[in-house]
Amino acid sequence: MTSQNPAGAVGGETKAEQEAKLPRRDWILLPILGFATMALLVIGTEELASRRFLDAETGLAPCLVLNDSSTGVRGVPNSTCWAKGKESSWTEYKFNSRGHRAGMESGSKDAGTYRIVMTGSSVAMGLFVPREQTVAALLPKELSQLTGRKVELYNTSIGAAYGGTPHSISLRFNEIVAAKPDMILWILTPWDIDHAPDLKPETDYLRAEGRSAPAPYREAGPRGVMLRRIAAAIGVQSLAGSLYDRMKEFRFRTLLSHYLFESQSLYVKSYLKNGEDAAGFLKSEWGPEWLEKRNDFDRYAAEIEEQAGSVGVPLVAVQVPTRAQAAMISMGEWPEGYDPYKIDHEVKAVIQAHGGVYLDIFPSFRSIPNPESHYMPVDGHPDADGHAMIAALIARQLSGGAISALRAATNQNRALVEKRKQTR
Image 1: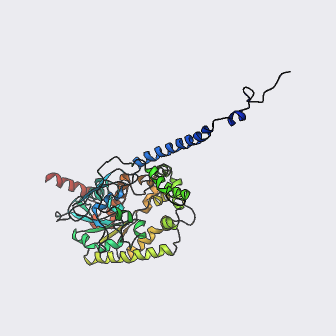
Image 2: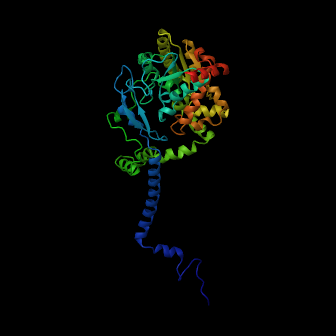
């Protein structure tokens, strides 16, 4: 009679019976080995992400005056710092003798030169972008070419640690006047309306105050950053809850978001889920919070425009859309209950009500394919290409008749200007 072995039996033992006889140490070592493998993969990914997406924006702290409530945040005269955002390269910030990232001094101007003095916050200052690639550097070149006259731009903007808010601009308006403007250009974003009355610096900058600025192009990426965060979490009551909070800080989240947000539709859907705090200005009907913010902005805009009027200088304001707005306008569609133009209309009404000139560049984004690709996907600031795009749109509006002194020259006038230059 032939005996039959159960399926999978070897030497008369089933597989289950063999597994039951595994050494006890294997039941301990195998899970540990699996966990260690996953940990190494995550730590390695975090290390790579830390090198690519290090955020050292607070490296600007030594170049900022953070403790003067009479002006708000301003630049330290004759200082130089290096800093970077999560998605940018190391960028140099050099401030002149008046504490401005202007690339020039605000002394006397040549006869026949039309000087624009620009103010605003981070976009106007050119945060995360080399100065020569910012709106401040590109706009006068565009205007000079379009108008046939020499145009220069002096930049008083400060865009870090809550600098450049409408309140602080009102307090520092004497700096704008001292630069001898023929025109004042105020670059706005929804952030400026959101933070109109703010003067107190961001906490991260206050912590970083007094530290030496990072060396330019230093290799970033603190080693063991993930292990340090986990170790810090172990000492608290709820390990699971703390680990979850720490996971939010890991830079591989930035890495994943950076590439996922390159999708126009996915980015917009994700942004609109941020709630009232981040996306409230995109609602077609504003709630009490954003109505109050609008009123705050109205108050400080009135002060700024009154000061400009008192010295007889035209004030021109232009609002730059956020990355989400740019994408929505370009797509030509958005969910019910939202309107990317809402804050544009509100700010335009405020500026014009107090006698200012408003340049409306929002509609121009309809004809630009994927304009959000010229913004940093996670951080949201315009990159160098974004600054070039914005400078071109502003130049087109300024030379199109908004300011008579900057009206675009005819081809005949341009030829005369070029001929005069050649005979000098």
